[in-house]
Length: 390
Ligand SMILES: *Cc1c(COP(=O)(O)O)cnc(C)c1O
Figure 1 (cartoon, helix red, strand yellow):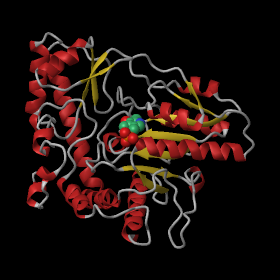
Figure 2 (cartoon, rainbow, N blue to C red; figure 1 turned 90 degrees about the vertical axis):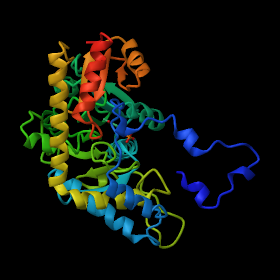
Figure 3 (cartoon, helix red, strand yellow; figure 1 turned 45 degrees about the horizontal axis):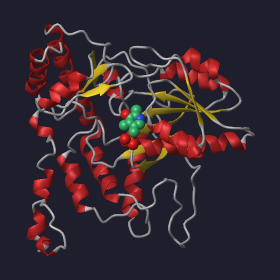
């Protein structure tokens, strides 16, 4: 950002005294410094960052001027569909899983009404569901019905979901990687429930979508979260989390267009495509960046990233156990949690270490991400010991 002066911008001529950006960003925390243990996002892959920087002018909302964006978008859909067991899946890039979840819920409600649904529609999900569904329920007037969930991990009880299904159920949501605990709902079981009751099933795999297929290969006892489960209709995946894509990079993949086209809107201009997303002007640069990144990494590169993350997590868990800590549960994805009181997070922050606190569960929450080294993980455990947190 030091380039503003080089570009001939005379900041001093502004009517107010503006601080320089380097002054302003001096208080930001860097991913490289071994301080960030709370972030589900990480520094974007350098190739993706470069492609994004080179293509900032591309507007995904204008396919006439920038046909490259639609082409990259559909290639990303094919790639993610393949990863989810359905290479002919359809889909779209979104600003993130909040928007992907919104589109999936809205489209499900449209379908439910078309089939004669009456009254206020319901969406059933576990207590590990993301708070984006709280926003969505406000916007769409949908009622969230919370199913019984495990008290340690918030993983949903599929039998409870089955019992809650009613004529007002427009959608079931499975969480494949709860953001609080990383727990993965039993999508295989939920799929059977959804199929038997004729209700669509959306999988919120924002954080797990790029991890679970590979962790399964590496021997993790995780369910198949993809379209091989016949009941699964849509899946949200966030490349800007464990895919190292630049923000904004979300994706919604679907078995059929009908599950994601509820927002289909004609533009007022000849020759520009219909919009399916909630956003109008959208970052085309991030779509090209995600395309380039997945093309570069392929499934092999993503598997390597999952392997690296798994090794980091094992290192953290080993160090914690050696330090005498008791984990709140056996981690499934990249969230490792310890029972602690909320002061622990503040105490660590005073040492310049950022963790987070899951208020509803009373957990100190550590997110394992690619910007960490084993040495930095050791530094975290040392700090936990020195502060008497473990
Ligand atoms: C991060 C996350 C979301 C929200 O995604 P954004 O990309 O922040 O919009 C939704 N669900 C889960 C499970 C998440 O981890």
